[in-house]
Image (cartoon, rainbow, N blue to C red):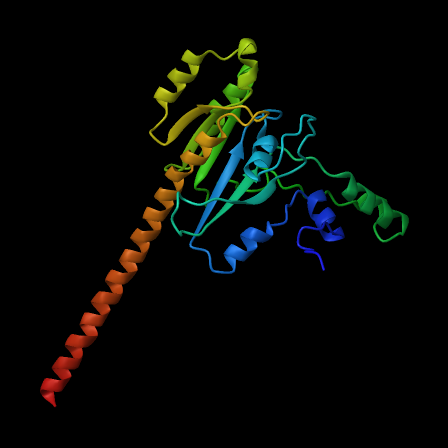
Length: 263
């Protein structure tokens, strides 16, 4: 019998229509061992800057030239490890849209319900669309990938405004996509340098190209920064817990000795 883990099913098709990717079997097997760290990465940027292409690249998928608007937030889990350590890291990546688009599947279901008389035509519910206006996308995020198109200046202005909303302490990587279109760029390198000087130390910058994969190695190396910060914070919390346990143990031990002396 063949391995059916990778065979698409009706459930997979339904999940894809809702912008949800099934977790890869390899990651599922790793997570059965227990998750050591959960790292959330958010991809932000104006439309048509390559957010979904970046998500596909992180998932290990090939580049798709045809552009299709992403209707709502997409979430995927990628396989990533810190260097050669045994740390188990579950990386959750969000491809965020500012304003979602109601899918035709929702419209078709509503039309059927109206035709069946189960919903009055004047009481048609609005489709809930998962986007940045309905969900706090930065909640519990460890890193943000801000992607821009240097051939369109307004996408850089988008980044300049959006980066102000990123929680303090969250690591940010500004990614200038479409490096292959360098001759068409409208955003000067000096403008980007001046912007980076105004940002805090949590912001880094790379140039990339989703079409040929340029910059992905730098991105994977950069992921070490938010992960190490997450690991440090986790260890600090555990250290505090151990200190409290130690103090409690000492208190119990002293109390026991005092009771023994009075007996």
